[in-house]
Length: 294
Ligand code: PBE
Image (cartoon, rainbow, N blue to C red):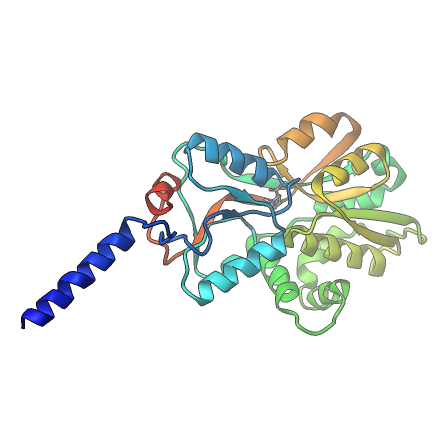
């Protein structure tokens, strides 16, 4: 009995030492001590630097990419480890995993936003039918979520545009009214810019498929970081971008470039950005993070 007690006491000691740190990182976030971010040009990255200052967080922000962020999230969830990522909705990760946005009592991340389509100067007069098409282009959460999910879950080598075509075939009622009657681009070239963010990938390839198949334009796509995309639309080297987050996330790009592009309005409403964790992470607010990091 005594022996057992001694054993129990020594165990307590070990646990107490471990809880005090003892030089080792044994916090809940030990596997992912940094916030897993995305590309540096994303608005959510600079907003997260502000959040780190505002909440005085003992975490750093790691630069990564949208897809790498999702795969880190998947790995952490497989092992039930705590992780915090820069996250946004609409995004297919919410369909794939049980996740939650951390509350943001300081309001650093802003409220709901809309996704806008912006086009280069003179684009609307050069291609009025395409401008009308973009003005009509609108997806709700279920529609965009469905298309994003099909792209994310495709493990064959199907080209993204062909996944969009399959979606078109099943959702004609969604997009057919976007196409102006009699539109015929006569093979005119159009270049769509996008960043590797799931919602923009989905909308860009859907627009490309419709413009080619239903309106007879010759459409190419170009992927780059947000900065080059905004500057490309403003200098006219890119015709259109469908994933401008306004009024908050891309406000600095809007300030810098909006004199030299045209905003055709929103294609999705109710988007949001923030810090996202798996639902089993036992905190609900950004200001609780420091209680769980070393
Ligand atoms: N996002 C997705 C972007 C806008 C679209 C939230 C990662 C950003 O932060 O700039």
